[in-house]
Length: 160
Image: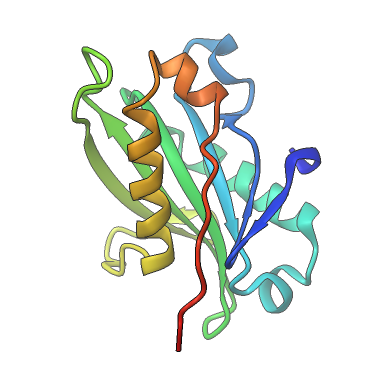
């Protein structure tokens, strides 16, 4: 994962990752993850391996949320105020026939645990990423094509 790291305003992007052993198991949805720089130093100690480990651990803890989904997108970040490691997880269903207009479910995991009462779904940076992912997905031929070809995303810093 680390070989394809590119800094984007606030984000560190990694190539597509599948939930653990990916579709080789037949059970887990494919997906892509983004690591936000928010809380990177304070919560993850500035350690990319700590972010990677948390992503894997959080996905393992959320396998039930990934059941019966076509694919997922995840954003990993650190909540500096609470000291929590956070994953914003988005599952997509109904992309048939491709590209479809899938329904999206959002989940917040704090320290690897799904927190249903956490209603702060995500931040604006993530909404921009999700929109650009959707635009890219609609230009691909299939789910496999989409997952194997991450979009080139440019985020622009605030003008003020």
